[in-house]
Amino acid sequence: MMENMDVAEVLLSFKMNLGSLLVRADRECLDPEYEEPFFEALMDAECLTALDVELWPKPMRALLDHLVFQYIGVLTHHGIDFPEGLLEGSSEEVWQRPLLEYLARHRWLVPSEVPWK
Image (cartoon, rainbow, N blue to C red; front, side, top):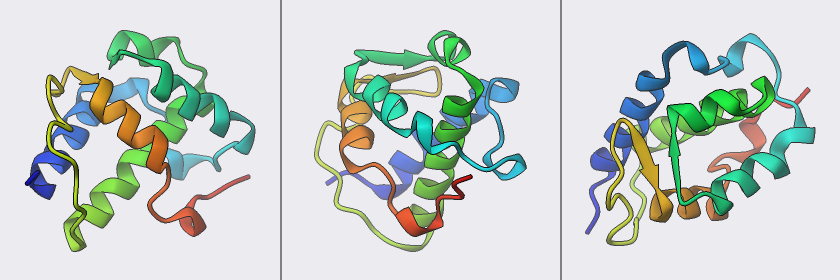
């Protein structure tokens, strides 16, 4: 079974690796206009790197920041049953297809806590 802390570590280390590329979601409200394009980008990508994120508009980078924030918060206090192979090939430098597809399909863990404009 996939360990929750393994998933949290990959998510957080990727976020930390992005550094200043991310737009902190707490500095501005998230734009719902970018929600669908954001999740479509995750679903359509074979992998995601810092170079890919750099090309995204700032509102999509803010969505990525908040998505990771939500997952870290939930994984710290609750367990999630993740499928085997979820992290295959993913690291602090790249997220691979299994993780991207999972994030795109499951979207927000706590939809009521997304700070929309």
